[in-house]
Length: 489
Image (cartoon, rainbow, N blue to C red; front, side, top):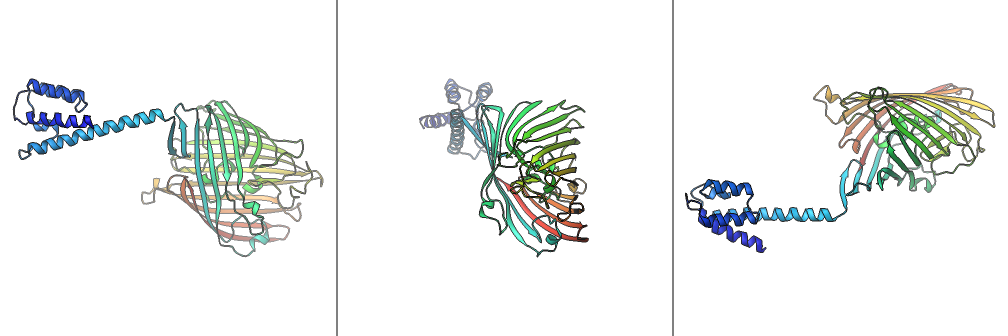
């Protein structure tokens, strides 16, 4: 405050001297300029310019150049300018001191709210996500004739409510991630425990070298793109009919992965892991383990992230071709986010004997993005050997889906709008007679409206679903509409 008063007095005296129209620069005026420079009211460049000028006018101090301006008005304007400059200087200095003294930086980005240490060795990201959905006439993928002919359902549901916590500690290459499903949806005949909160992902990555990184924990293992792509990074409201049969989903174990020859035509990524094979949150009930391996060729020397659509508008064409395989011996014939389960017509995991089923499966995968266009495709093969019944059954399936932002071709199409199409099929043993196959198909049309990329978007899709049941000699079909808002904070 003392300094502010001093500057006001100094400027008042100086303006009085400067108001003489062509007064030569006197020693007193120079002294006042020196005082103003010392107090930070004017810069060194301004001081030098005024000294060279040799004469001063009210315009030199931001006052009105009109002859009608009084000396009092000029003094008031100059005083206001001095106050603003001093306030800004003091504010900047305080902010700088606080920033230097506080050890943690806070911000918000695509991964939510971030707290990070000044040295960069510690970081935590916290994000909340909600997926709110309406469906009609069925909320799932009907697999049997009875499901196609069941009463229609029109329902709203909080399909996913998630909390995500991730970051790194000690060093930027020692990473961690947790994900909690706060309220999974359930059917009316399910127990309340089916809708209780649950930890679905927990993992730690040692990622110091790109060529060799280790992960331990529980996560959706890196077998196929459609499943590993987050449900919040999908092109349609939900994954295809292929997913239920062929996903390996979340497992507990250890994995080695890496990237070789980065940026070259030989750009290669690999994954190899050993897991319990019992799914999420369950210990192994025998001495057999699940083994999985995946090789991905980035044939254009650029890597694709695990997310669908090209909302980022990839400037350079980017694609990958991948192959993966897995084998497991245990009581599971399928897996999901709920853990170990069974395919239609096979014994449940709870009633199956340890090691009853031997499951071998493979997948071929292709993905490509370029300037708003996206394409991905998978072909699956799976065999389930029942060691008690001494039978072996094969499953095949696949999908292809594509999307495009047509604003890139036609300016009248809204920029946030993406249109998409997907075809999928599954051939699986009939649950009544496993020597016969059922054939299912999906034809889906989708539309996305991106508000903030995948973090805030509306999705609508319409599907035509068919089933050919060879045991019952029936062909049935149904149509399904879904609408969803997926938002992350």
